Length: 158
Figure (cartoon, rainbow, N blue to C red):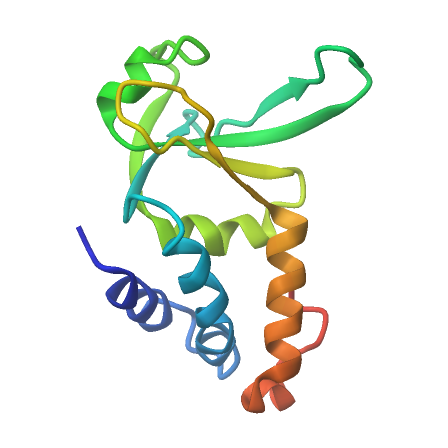
């Protein structure tokens, strides 16, 4: 399991070498790191379908069904996925281990998703930690405005 700094460096190293993306990742790394440090695990399991797309779950408000949000669950272990009543693993789904930094980075681009729910406690689906895409994007925008290297990063990147 990679620690957070190694995950960030790996994300930078594996980014397209287009002259922008590695600098962008380096510029927003403090935001990703701060959020990752609030979570208990450095790696989570994400459910994917056969097309390798993340499985999105639509949650409805109990008192107002018009209020909905689209979320992705991040599980702390394989055992927690099979124990979860919401996703009893079917043959169409696979659980993929992913570094937490990669999950957060990908959330920024997932326009159709509102949040990722990080299940933190093994063996229970006790209150998950919710990371909202819009809040993450706002923090990244603030970071880019502060970053001295953001002169060559498009302002609408996040």
